[in-house]
Image 1 (spheres, helix red, strand yellow):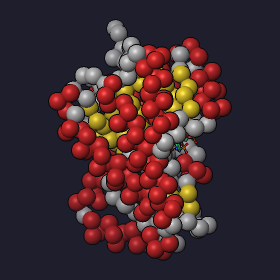
Image 2: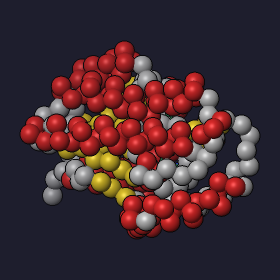
Image 3: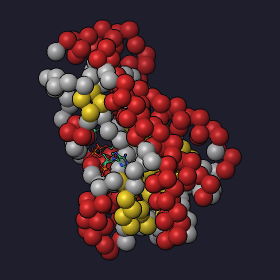
Image 4: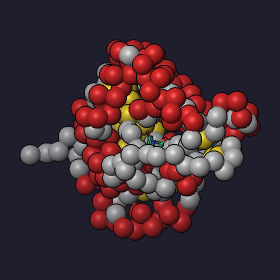
Amino acid sequence: MEHPLEGKVAVVTGASSGIGEAAVLELASRGASVVAAARSAEKLKDLARRAAASGVLAVETDVSDRDSVEAMIERVLGEFGRLDVLVNNAGLGLSGRVAELRAEDLRYVFEVNAVGPLNCMQAALPHMGRGGRIINVSSVVGKRAIPKVGGYCSTKFALNALSDSLRVEVADRGISVTSVYPGTTRTSFRDNSRRTKDEKRGWRPKGVTPDKVAKKIAAAAEKGPRDVYVTLSDRLFVAGVTLFPGLTDRALRSWAKD
Ligand code: NJP
């Protein structure tokens, strides 16, 4: 039986580590031709070497730079002649209390987490046909902001807004827009986060492996659902905080203290 991704071309941003790297390998294993985009050329080359049999193409890209994104999309079209799936996964964290956040840090993280996906969507959309899939990697904390990472949460809320508007705008073209909401995932994310100051790192759940998130992303590339949660507890968390916002505020107060 032919796999739904056979013959399809997928771009994954933030492909040099963590969830993006795992998504490249998962999509390739399901038959897609995959373009791995990020800034670290060496890590991408290494990934392309490891996935040599699947023909992964590494393209050095800074998603916050529109020219760099345009050049990446041109390269995709030059090499493969089509573009079916865009996974906007590149991103970084920002920790710090709202009262202490530096505006320049927030601007930088917005440039990567929200303007980056915007650059990629605007560059890719003119080349996508029916059955095209845009998959935006958000976060459970893009559904309910929590203390000490409000800046990061705000970038994911912005990304969700872009996804929700775009979904309706491109529905008639047969293009789907999926939001993926991971919770804690065991990657280099925390080490790569910007920090307002050296604060004690609070408790975090152990989290899931990047492979688990990658499987969800690949399934979304096949079927194009609206929303994707990685675990049942993430889904229940979002349902609970939506139903009981005041109670959630009270429950989160202890988290804000330490
Ligand atoms: O993090 P990490 P994850 N242009 O640090 C790339 C979300 N998420 O895999 O450019 C292009 O291992 C960077 O590559 P490089 C999170 O918000 C995570 O966990 O070479 N790429 C690297 O490949 C993010 O959206 C958790 O430095 C840029 C990648 O981004 C996504 O999951 C929880 C770039 C980051 O890999 C993947 O994060 C959650 C740029 N300007 C949501 N800047 C979690 N891990 O717990 C960075 O709810 N990158």
